[in-house]
Image 1 (cartoon, rainbow, N blue to C red):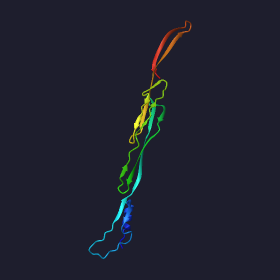
Image 2 (cartoon, rainbow, N blue to C red):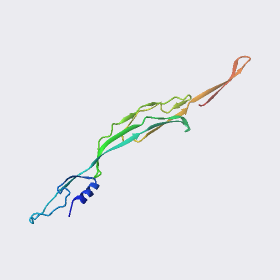
Image 3 (cartoon, one colour):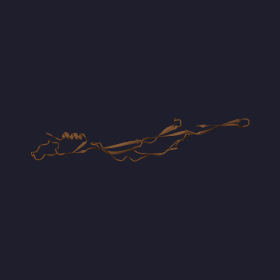
Image 4 (cartoon, one colour):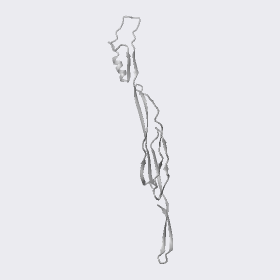
Length: 171
């Protein structure tokens, strides 16, 4: 005897949900009316699942001297996180997404002073990022300042300067 059970179970395995089975899971029985075919309906619906997606953006500022050597430890900002939710149709695997959380901004970061050096930027500007932004990496380069050294040659008997040499160079 034919029942709908096997076919319904196949659809349930494909993420359908049984709504109504006019056979009530019982074997179908032929009637005695040769003029009309019997019709039974089995109604199914898709199943759905909540889904979510997250993305994080990191900001790192490197501090180095012009020769590439590290000038001071890197600055790492607090991670900015973005997320969105949606619902997935488990039969079609299509996802209906809601909007991402709003854009956010990494704050401005003042560059620390190092005596004898001038940074190429005094402050890392604020950076606005969104869910599709890549990590932010910036490098501040410290350049050696020009320096002058004076060497005075002094006659201790007369307390007069005999000669002054001026030496110009970098920190």
